[in-house]
Image 1 (cartoon, rainbow, N blue to C red):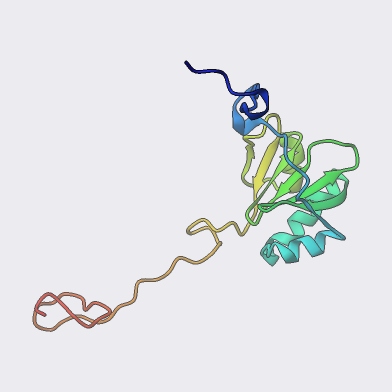
Image 2: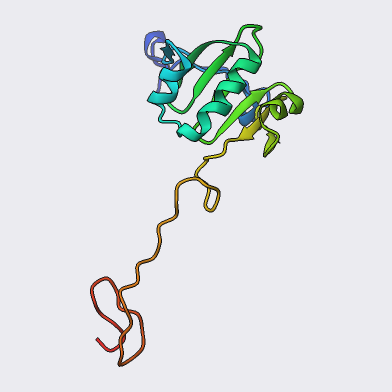
Length: 161
């Protein structure tokens, strides 16, 4: 005969309810956030490309950012009015309350965010191929074999080797 385990060794039960798609939930654990003394300190520590700094400065001025914190993935610019934070990453910003607010920062490449009810924009240097971001590696030419007319590999071999 089996008996129930004593109360003190039973596994706890949890009641977890998710109220919508996970990508739309904006709740975050802020316990590990880093506080920055300035936007410049955050931009430097996150190694945001210099070409993006002016647009980012314009964005945080426009929304009235009063403080800056950081998660492992992005900088957060907190609004004085308590509106949604701007999430600043190397290649984009999101958290604008309207398309018009995002376009006031940059009329190029504005898009609705996966975060409910906010908009984002792509920054000039964002790392996509052929976009002005990180250059794509060029294939090296190691020469052509004069016998079989194939390209040499980095090891110096060809089709006749």
